[in-house]
Length: 212
Image (cartoon, rainbow, N blue to C red; front, top):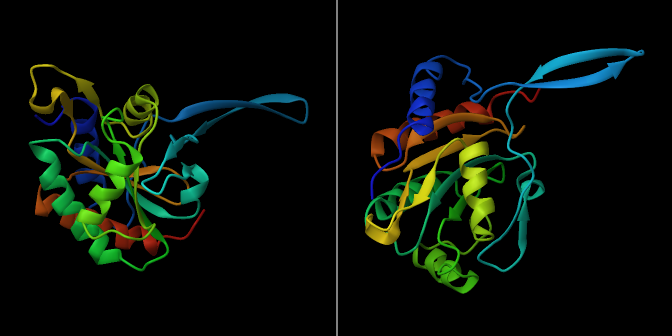
């Protein structure tokens, strides 16, 4: 399996360039929203945000955007039988989990891209194998089209089925940092210690950033 290029590489570049100062960039294309004010039509430019979603966690309950309301969280995409980059990703994400364990303002959301095989029971066993027994790190499954759609259109990373690839899927090794307003604030290489060191430093920045 290989890391996807395109959108994720652009995001990594923006994250690297924009997060050198005290304020992290807001990634994604702004959207035009038209509304009526005092009888006049006004068009505002608003930041790209993660839309609402409904998936199922390793505990069998529904996870939605409301589950993460007011939280800084890290999202990624994986599958439990992945033979290549996923083990590296989970080793690195475990570092994030251990670093912020017990901090109620930080969560992790890992989406399987193989929901046919990654059932709730499989995800629960996988989470327990990593030592995750709480709700701070949620492993979610659901409709495959919805998972792929939110990855590409909301989190700005990609995955695709590829019969020639190990495990049958090509997907990004990115970790995506989302703020309390559901805005993407950074995309990082989740397969390397350096990328994840940067992610953890940027989480610390977001935790001290005032809500607007």
